[in-house]
Image (cartoon, rainbow, N blue to C red):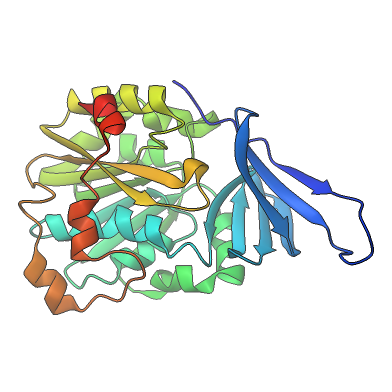
Length: 298
């Protein structure tokens, strides 16, 4: 499978005395193109047992969490990723009582799930506790959901949890990093089949499915695998300014509910949800794909 090769670097450029902190962060795709941010401050830099964790601050994006050299989440991205990975399946499922998040260490997805009173319990299975602790220190608005009594944090291998649990879930969210290293196994057909088996009869899986612009081979293979398992598989997208190409995708995989036909608009209106990106129009429009993306998944 094709993977995004992130090549982070800090560049110190020697110029005049007008800027004594002329430090830049770059994340490159295959060493050919990417995003560069001027670093106003390095707030934290450490290594956990699993990865390098950095928090930097930039004028445009604010505080930004960087894991293994890849930008994950920031203050000023309108929370688009977290809102779209959660509210789309939650408003399409008729009774989302039990939710499982695999990954999601910044806790943004968990916090969005907790906005739904219908949810009785949300388990977040994240392998690296230090990601949660770092986010709580620097981006506390993302971790509000951890204080909800319905939230259950498990610091464990998500793949092992799926393989060993006998619990069933109405919604499973694969809030994963890129398919590199240990995360690569969580993008494979065998794992997706195990996730399918842990869903209730009308269960929904949503998985982040990379950039349709950069990661074409990954997208093709992933959707071919998912379509061989689930009766309903639909891609939807969002604008994610700190991710490669700024255009990100999710796989909506269902045993029954349709993301458009079964959208519960009345529940959305009654909830008076506070969001920065998601709304009903965005929900519907997110499933309208450009032609080059349709050709990847059809």
